[in-house]
Length: 306
Image 1: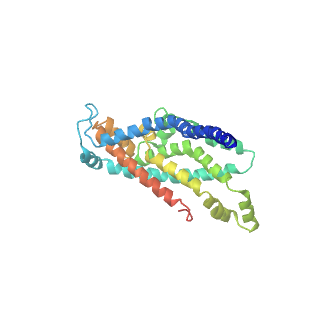
Image 2: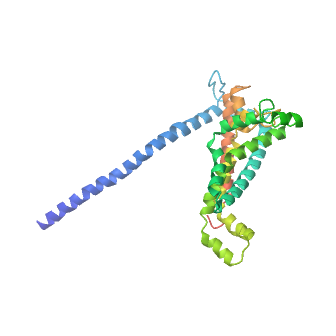
Image 3: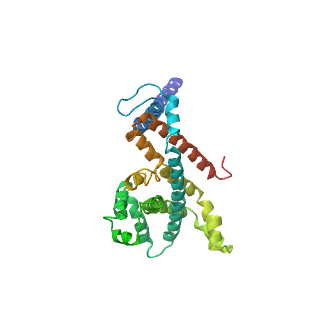
């Protein structure tokens, strides 16, 4: 009797445990299902369609006309503005990344100090980030206008044109991007700065380190993860720049501000109207982004990380 009662007790204790063990994976899949469906429908399916289009003769109006694997990529590389757009996109990316990260760090150091204007400055620097990029581009397009802009008379008297020359169009667009995103990068840098323990700075002051030595030997090394994040975000966003140049310059003057993404748009919907070549360009940009991001992650990796 004792043995039978002990066996029944073990069976009763085992049943709920098995049901919970079975329900765990099922609940996990149910929780992950909405995100998985979202990723599949809005990322993997369009990505597969892009690869299919890049390997096919796919005019805009008539649709898929059959396999065309090597020709699309050859035609994409041989486009008249392909290498010019790459050169300009890399130049714009380098300038924007250096200015935004440097200015974001400077603003973060400025608002980090406990002053009476700290809250006001943080809000003032962050407010432009709430404005959409397309709306900000339209706003600056009016400001830069030599006819309707508020600086029209001054521009006419001094002979200044913001968007009429290649250099002016480039720096005018960079100024828009810096105004729009400087507060956002300031916020990221500020989070990184606040994550550095005060004890480290206190020990440096006790050892007699100057402000520059503290910044060089403590702040910058401990901000490595923040620098990695901001650099990847800034480089990726700059390489995919489209709205600001499409609204402000349309790639001009004389195609001097043509970015790679704008070239993809022009090939797909203007001029050639060829989705196959545009998809091939998109695949090349995707591969370049993967390579660049891997290189950045390796560059910012600490020596002790495997």
